[in-house]
Image (tube, rainbow, N blue to C red):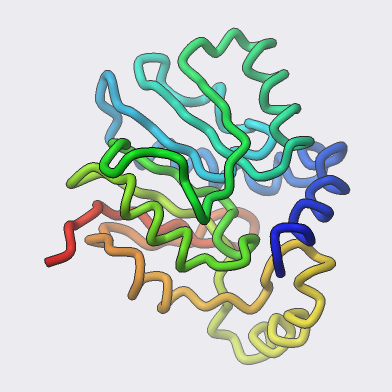
Amino acid sequence: MNNETILNAYKRYAPVYDWVFGKIFHPGRQAALDAMNWQTGDQVLEVGVGTGLSLPDYPADVTVTGIDLSKPMLDKARKRVKDDALSNVTLHCMDAQKLDFPDQTFDKIIVLYVLSVVPDPYQVLAEIRRVCKPGAEVIFVNHFSKENPLIRRIEAGLARYASGLGFQPDFPLQPVLDNVGLEVQEVRAVNMLGYWTMVHGRHVEQP
């Protein structure tokens, strides 16, 4: 996959994204927001904010910065921010592989359904580590490859169609845990049939 194929996929998805994926992905979004230890004044980054489905559910006393590569998706998020008068939210069109923020900017980072839809997820992880403040909380929600041999074979077979699908079906969890630079506090299944996984951790500075 590359940015062009991803942009093409989400240009197709944008008009129907909320209708198709809103309810399916809602439990994972809510689990992530509920798991955070929010503090007044937190600087929050949501990577891959999409159409902004999560934005109305953030605490009003934190400052939320949302980024996404897809302009059609962001247009929907901007409309949501305006319609809901979300004065604590700022949105930017930005590549998660090259975040335009200084080092150690954010207290909390939420990454919902993003890691398997970017060309280089490990570059995204590196950028997230860079913009985390020491001790920052980070939560990922994503599909990861399953241990079940039959499902794993299906995912591997679908991998050849990743560009058309707009995501990578064959995406193992362990390499993410090995590269994320987090003190992992919780890993649990979320959403329908537990097919997605939430990873909650705290950023630790590398020696």
